[in-house]
Amino acid sequence: MPPPPVYPVPPQVGQGPGGAGLMYQLTGAAGWGILLGLATIIVPFVFNRVFFFIPIIGLLAGVQAIRTGRLVGGIIAIVLNLIGGVITLIALFA
Image (cartoon, helix red, strand yellow):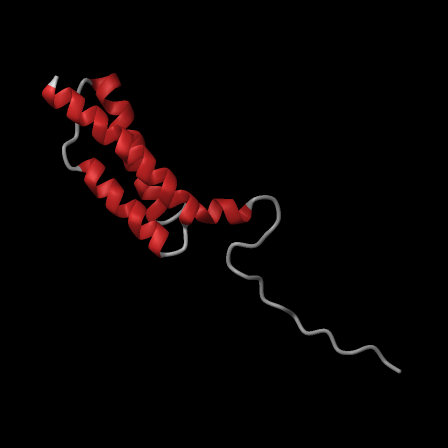
C-alpha cells in the first residue's frame, strides 16, 4: 500500500526556528512603543530635554500592540512609557 500524499503546510504566524516568534512580538506598533519609551527615558539624561506627549503616544502604541496580538511587546512598551512619563513629571515639577 503506498504512503498517503504529503501536502505542504504553510507556516503559522509567530512560529519559526530560534525565536522568530519573539521577534514578531517586537515589531509593528510594539516596536514603535518601545522606541518611544526608550526615547522618553534616555533623552532627558543625555540631552537635558523632556518630551511632553511622547509617553502618551507610546502608551497608545503599546495598547494597540496588545490589541493586535503582540502581548509581550505591548507590555514592554507600556512599562517603558510609564517610566518615561514619571521621569517627565519629575522633570516638570521638581
